[in-house]
Length: 309
Image (cartoon, rainbow, N blue to C red):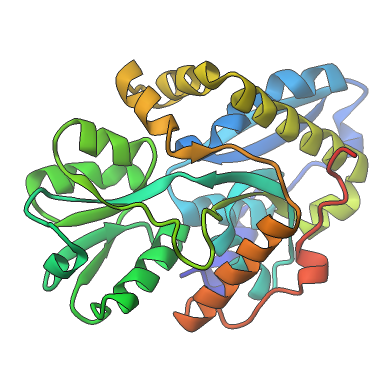
């Protein structure tokens, strides 16, 4: 779980941020934080939309959820695709964040080895999951429903590290994001056990987020970045083959795995009542599981004012 101490350490260690005005009359430079999951595919398309607006965007991928959100909180990157669970943890630890738009819905599942028929068969077994993630929130909810909260061992691993332990039999199941969940199933290392969209938060997963400080200091730039996020996401929705190709290019997956994995992705920038309801349900689930001390100040945390009309 993210703590104020770890976030303060990251903030102190971060390099000084160069004021925007000192960048001269050339392109404005921004850094976009992304993740090793295909839910963030839109980020890789954003630079081409930002360039005509005079913005030079660099996409930086972080293997660890904690590293990515520390980077956004500290200002080491300007904006990012953020797991909404981690974003709320950071905000409520005293590092104000803004959710500017929906990032992507869905994108994860529980994959178990072939000897596991139901969740009950996981009793006494090990499950790999990414610490602080939406996956962990949904998994804890399901384990509580099944009466298994104290009967399984959770091993914290980043998503890209989970398939091999499943293949070796080191864990009985993984709660994993795409494309790695599909990588495991299509290689025959496991089978889908649970597609976790039947919890109160539904498919809620990813937000397009920034620190509140960045947004306040750079409103015009924020508007351009959000517009690029919307345009990139629309391209993925309108042309599914682009999501497949992006998965192949960025994650070095075969076409077969890329095509199958994108069927579990629901690209969207819809940020209205349904999205916000899912976000608030997520907060409730986290508080119940002691992953969050309190809800964010929703009037400040959700800031969709930069979305195109």
